[in-house]
Amino acid sequence: MTKTGEYDVIILGAGPGGYVAGIRAGQLGLKACVIERETLGGVCLNWGCIPTKNLIHQAGIFHSRLELEEMGCTVDQERFDYEYVYNQSREAVRTLVSGVEQLLKKNRVEHIRATATIVSRNGVAIDDTTEISGKNIIIATGSRPLQIEGFEFDEGQVLSSTGILSLKKLPDSLIILGAGAIGCEFAYIMNRFGVRVHLVEMEKHILPVEDARVAAVLERSFKESGIEVITGARAESLEKTSEKVTVALTDKKGSARHIEAQKVLCVFGRTPNTDAIGLERIGLKTEGGFIPVGDYYRTEAQGVYAVGDVVKTPLLAHVASREGEIAVEHIARLKPQPRIDPDTIPSAVYCEPQVASFGLREGQAKEKNTPYKKVMLPYRGIGKAVAIGRTEGMIKTLHDPETQEILGAHIVGHDATELIHELLLAKTAGLLPGDIAGMVHAHPTLSEGIMEQMRTVDADL
Image (cartoon, rainbow, N blue to C red; front, side, top):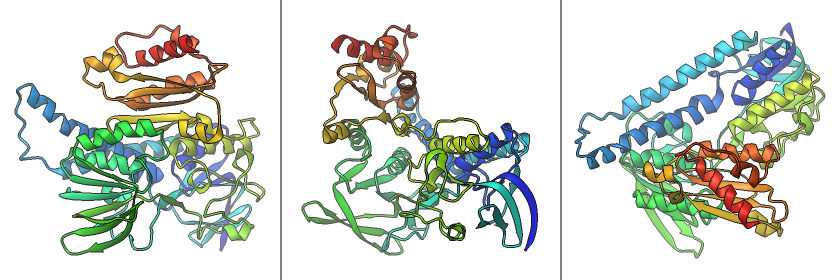
């Protein structure tokens, strides 16, 4: 094997963790390379966050024809072609992939398109033909859709999240197994385009990691839109014929039922890409597929870091990006925060109404006997929400009953994924409700809802 190249940092994977780490390394004057066997941007940019949000946007436009009809307009749907929608989503991907490529070049980061395998604490094999060396290695190889026995993907009738994003023709009907963020977003997309959707969740409510009352608002909205929401039910088996897929369900009481559709989307979670990358050669063992890390995302192997979906932190693109930056800043001998504070990580679900949150959930507070004060404001109390006809939703915040500190925030409603950051900024900056309530907000805006929420908190506590 030919040996060549000496780098300050070798990065395995070019998803949000890897390419952001590479850019940060270049900014800090480190000689870096990013190795990626597929397209730059990883799952998020190519088969996740970006194409999904594009489809959500287009689904919303298509659905808005109903509002136009209320104004007396007539919309001809005969020429609607979902392949055009698909092509638009891929164009958005291509634009951003090109942007990542340019950013790497601008910051003098070498992009190597190949399969990488770790051979030592300072060595990485490229396509098993060439070995490059680096003072440090960052593992950012991401994750893939989790397959469960009996529900294996064929990407024809049984789809993964990647498979459904590859469709150029809409199915007549769709079963979605798993009502986390991915399942709910695809339920919204397909429903808005006229597909008959069955959304199945094993837990008590959809979005099981989110606040129960917030999830209830979205569930009610889904049902009103015609989505069949089935909670507390486990998928036991799947049968396929040439024309349909049948899924057998069992609820908590043991009652069985069968549902049928043209296709099924299985979104049971994701599994880290840590197999076959050479971890055993440097003495690294995984826990459930995840790589254990300490502060600055260092592994037990000297000079080797791991970030993103390969470590047991929230599998979110923005988490991976910040972890990559922290690792690189530590390599560059800066003094970044050792880890991301989990209470300051925002989550976001982009269907309509949107869902966004961070910090303490009410259910967690009750389980841990954590004292808290709860305040809620309905969207119908916000002038802008009434003006634009988006009154579905609420703002819910949890506070320390003594200090008024924001412990957690949960929003369901129009533009929730944008609004959440005002509350998150307040928390990270140590601001109290009175500080936000006293800040002048433009009228009319949805962010006035945050101001009114904080005025309520300030008056009540």
